[in-house]
Length: 171
Image (cartoon, rainbow, N blue to C red; front, side, top):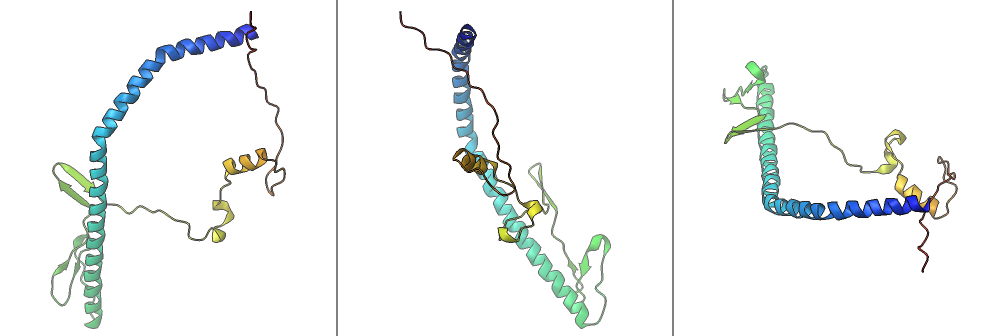
């Protein structure tokens, strides 16, 4: 058993000797390219934020126009004219009320806007139990610290094994 452990240590030392310089070189290359590409990544994020702000303002402006057209139609007690593709006509001005574009093409690229659903927890006490998740790392820490009873959690022992190589005898 002792020879086997020493053989494993020797093999690992050889592996590290061969792969260490390669890993260091790879880390340097990755750091260099990250440094060069970081301004592009930052610019991309800023541009996306600005385009989203613009798109949000456009949607709000267009929705305000649509509401005004609908109210004008109600005030005149007429149906709101709807054209092909869902476009609405303002009955007072006769102008077509635009809809926000879903795609914009420029410089050979296309930006497509979509509505993505997301969430944030505002009061965790109101969240139904099926959407809650146990923090396993936190539970593991308190069990290791000595806690042996937590409602809804079975705490038990498992047999483990640790093998260490004996220290070389001094000659």
